[in-house]
Length: 288
Image 1 (tube, rainbow, N blue to C red):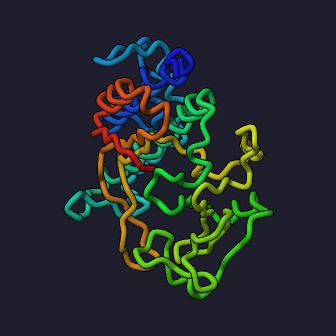
Image 2 (image 1 turned 180 degrees about the vertical axis):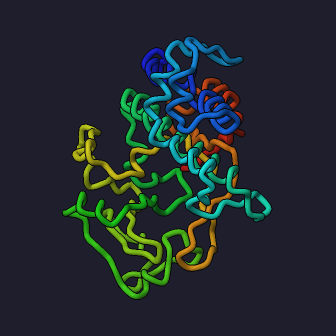
């Protein structure tokens, strides 16, 4: 793969928005501003940091204004929308919790756009086909929101009391018709304890993957299919919380999956992106 084919995505990686967000956050929380928009409107142009020159910072930040507005809740004394803890499990103060939630949302939005620019030129179907004979996994799981199951009308559906007691990644696999759920020849929709997912057994194709490698539902594809293989982990969901309790743990990291062709090709650029955002970058192989 030639890096020139990935130029549009590389340009965004070279000018991450998080350094600008951190600047706006500091100015807003320490200054006499009533709204985040006021801060953005008063920024000089261009802005130069140790990593990049931003010719139009106001325009770049303006695209994320709706995601930045929760910062205003800090000044109004509104508590965070969910519990946020540090790596040891201790609750964070309200300001740190809210600013971390904002950074996670902005980073996720930017990486989704970067993914769209980097993924298309690869012509890759790695995420759309189950494990091949060289891989240890028996299946791949694509988590779905309930309404997204309608995108797969031809896929067989499986829902039972047995499945409702399990998750796809449980050590002891749920069984369907007396066999492990993944022991089938085609993909299918399964309803688990934690919701729906599309299961791709060995060599099985996503029902919406055309022979040409194109996706039949690309414009409406599930949310998980829009996510980059550079995952935002400013925060990660808490496991094992009380029923109905939403919570996040502060991580300050990026996870980059090197199975993806563009991640492997752009290791240096991704490392620089993470450094500019003051995040730890973890490169990991996922499908091995």
